[in-house]
Image (tube, rainbow, N blue to C red; front, side):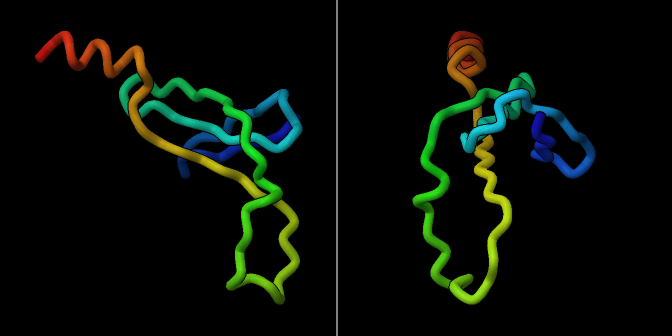
Length: 73
């Protein structure tokens, strides 16, 4: 199990331990996992640092909420 921290005031635990990304919908607060190759992301400014953990968090509006927003307008 892996701890994820997308917001400062909440902790969640992810049963998926392989590297992947997280998308959080700002409307319904649902978190979606998505595949990505985090290990290929380069951080040239950190060449002299030892990176021990990489996380990718993306926020936006999920398709279900977008559909609801578009129907209400």
